[in-house]
Amino acid sequence: MAELVVNGLTRSFGDVRAVDGIDFTVADGEFLTLLGPSGCGKSTTLAAVAGLDKPDGGRITLGSDVFFDAADGTFVPSERREIGLVFQSYALWPHLTVRQNLEFPLKLRNIKRKDRAQRIEEALGLVEMTAYADRYPHALSGGQQQRVALARTLVYRPGLLLLDEPLSNLDAKLRERARTWLRHLQSHVRVTTVYVTHDQAEALALSDRIAVMNGGKIAQLADPHTIYDRPADAFIADFIGSSNFLCGTVTEADHGTVKVDLDGAAALIAPSARPLTAGTRVRVSVRPEQIEIVEPGTAGPNVFPVTIEERTFLGAYNTLEVKAGENAFRVECRRVPDTDMIHVHIPETAGIVFPETASR
Ligand SMILES: Nc1ncnc2c1ncn2[C@@H]1O[C@H](COP(=O)(O)OP(=O)(O)OP(=O)(O)O)[C@@H](O)[C@H]1O
Ligand SMILES: [Mg+2]
Image (tube, rainbow, N blue to C red):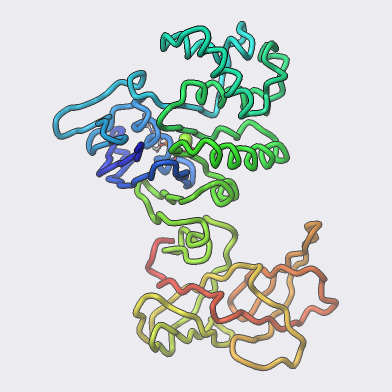
C-alpha cells in the first residue's frame, strides 16, 4: 500500500552535487537504510522525501500520493505528507509531560479526546514507556527520551517513518539495546521506514535492505548479507566491516576464477565476477575473520607464510598485523601464536577481486 518510490532524484548546492540522480523503492513495511560516509548525501535524500528541502529534479511518490515531481512542479509541503520524522536531535517539548508530548500531534490533527487517550496508551506501550507518561523530558534518560520521540511520531500512524541518525546521541551500550528494540518495534508495526546512518553495524543489524551511498550516488542496494559478503566495489568492501586489500597481478583467468600473484608473495586463487585478463593489476579484498591460521607444514592452495608484526588484544579475540611480501594485512584469532612466523590459509571463496582502477 505505502510503497515509497524515488526516481532520478538530484539536488545540488552550488558546485556540490549532494544527490546525483538516485533511484530506490522501499516496499510497504520494509526497512531500508541509507548508509555511507559523511557528506555522501544521506540527509539531503531524506530531507527531500520528508519535504524539508526541495530537490532540483526527480520524482517521489508514496503509494498513490505524488510528493514531488520536477516535471510538473508538484511539491507537497512536509506537513501534508503524513510522515513520522525523527532526527538526531529529537527535541521533545520540555514544558510538556510525555503524555502531552504525544497528545500534541493528535490535537493538531483534530483527533477526538477519547481516541487520543487510546492511541497514546498504544504508542507508549509499543516503546515500553507507559510508566513514564506523566514525567517531564528532563527527568528521562537519553534513551528514554529517544523512545518518547519515536512514540510521538508513531502515535499518529504515519504511512512512512524517516529516521536520521536517531541513535547517535546514545552511548555504545545503549545504542546496541536501542538497535534491538527498534528492530523489534519495526517488525511489530511494519511501517515503511527509511533510516539514515553512517554506522555500518547499525545498518547491518537493522535493515531489510541497505543502499550504500558514495558521492551522491547509490553504489549498491541489496540485503545486508549481500552487501557484506559480495560488495559491488572496493569502496563498499572497505566501508562495510573491515577489509584487507591484497595487491597483485592476475596470472591466469578461467571461468570466473582468477589466480593472482600477490606482490612479493605467493599466488592466491579467488573467484571473480568480472572478466579479467592476465596482467591486470588487482586488489583482493579479504575479511580478517575469514583468514585461518594453519599448522606449519600445511600445504595446499592459498596457504602461505606470513610474519607477525604486531599483536593487539581486544578482549574476545586478538588481531595480528601480518606481512607477506609487500602486502600487510590483518588476521583475527582467539589464541595468539607464540612465534612470529606463521602460515595462513585464505579460503578460495573468501577473496573478492577488484581491478585496481575501480573506485579507491
Ligand atoms: N544547505 C546546504 N548548503 C550547502 N551545501 C549543503 C547543504 N546541505 C548539504 N550540503 C552539502 O551536500 C553534501 C551532502 O550533505 P548531506 O547532509 O546529505 O550528507 P550526509 O550523508 O547526511 O552526511 P553526514 O553523515 O555527515 O550527516 C555535503 O557535501 C554537504 O556539505
Ligand atoms: Mg546527515
